[in-house]
Length: 238
Image (cartoon, rainbow, N blue to C red; front, side, top):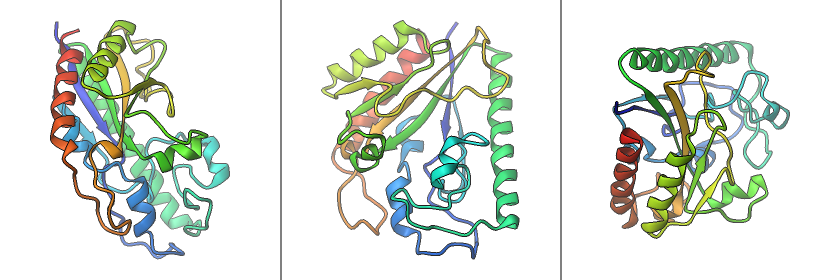
């Protein structure tokens, strides 16, 4: 039976709700960390998209995440480079955590509803720049990183996706510079649930222009989108 594909899009928005706790203009930081256009590049049977910037609420972090220590947990208090970003205000923190929990509940519910009909693959859709990868210790990164889970990312599926991307001329790494993929609560061990993460290097599809402006797609955008469409078909049918 074909898999349904649910695409999780956590970081494609650069929207920040009205908030007076920020200490700096966040435009540059948002431009750096936003996963631009991943909601259009990676398309499945349905998507669960977070409507706000990760600079406001990062739904890919864990509660009590280790990155809290550097101000990059669910509630960012520092920039990627470690500069002060915003104050820790209780009212805003409560709003952020309510959004975080609501989003995760919506994602888990969407998967459970789909599992009642067919097997499901969750594709966690991301992008990154070589600048972002440098904070993981990598000076540069592959064109595409596939993040995997030992239990829920079938080896044959990962191998087919890697072969597709390599055939298309892209460099590919598994779990580097970013490792793993999201497994929503309550789905660990479910035999009809699979998951993987796709990290697209922004150099493939964005123009390198004004760092304070919303980036525009490059000539590589449409080609990448077509290859990713083929990748979704492999996931659906394998």
